[in-house]
Image 1 (cartoon, rainbow, N blue to C red):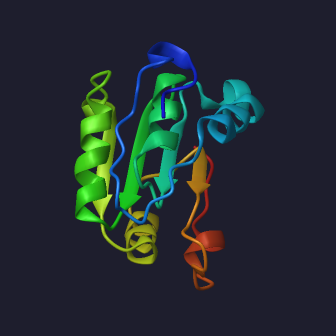
Image 2: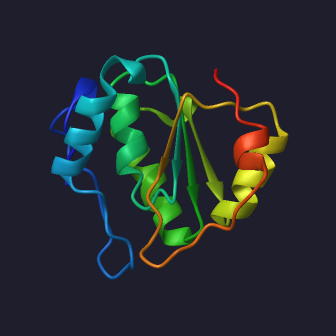
Image 3: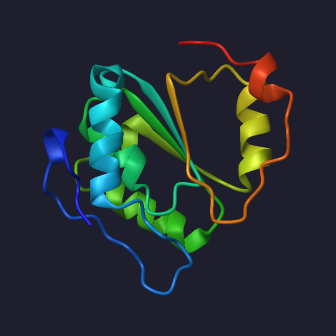
Length: 140
C-alpha cells in the first residue's frame, strides 16, 4: 500500500495484519481522487471509518488543507498517526476515537464543516438515519 499521488506519491503506508480492516486499495484511491480532481486542493476532508487513514492521507498529499479521521479501533488509531508522520501532516489533521455515529453527531454540533466527506464503513454496517446529516450540512 502506498500514496498514489501528490507530494507524498509513492511513499509506503503502514498497515496492520490481523486487524479486521480492509484498506482501500491503491487503484480505488487513485480512481477516487482522479474523479475528485481539483476539488481536493484546499479542502477540509473527513475520512469516516478511517482504518489505516489511507484515504485521508491521500487527500492531504493531494493538497487538502485539513483531514479529520474517525476511527474506533485503538490499534488503527496508532497506525493512522504513524502514517501521518510520513510527511509531517500531524498539524493539519485530527484523529477522533469513537463510534462513527457518535463522532459525527458531535462534529455536526460544532463549528467544523467539511468540503469532502468519505464514508467506507465495514461490510454489513448500517448507519442509522440521522437528522444531522441533512439539517446541519453546510458547504465550506
